[in-house]
Image (cartoon, helix red, strand yellow):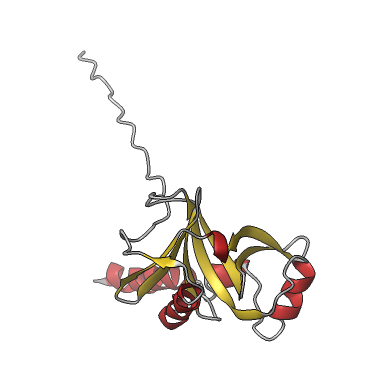
Length: 187
């Protein structure tokens, strides 16, 4: 019992010291809603049409028909002609392009929805993007913003198809266990 009284505070301290108060996407992607339109125009000079929607996001880039691909935290800017998806380069303090989608070149768009998880799936000839809008503070999917993005793209006349399911990032590598066999030496 005495050991339990000593171990309990130690265990609680260890568990609480591992808490992370800032979500990883907020820590790695700079996004200020009020300044974003003026900042992105400086970093992406080709963006010369008015931005209709923008926000924080996560995107998976893959090939058409694939259900997995590299995962990025990002920001997006939707215009009347295209969708711009950027990462953040903290060393140069500017946005870097992850993908640029010409809405006229899109073959299909679909919306995957399961509970609060929503994903806009954009398919081009040789690329597929699965994008989920995030809340401004990061850490959680903003289902309403994702649906608004889907509706805006659909309204441009892009063909809507049924989603085949979620596009997911690759599974993380698991630990490798190497069994050690130590023969017993009889004396």
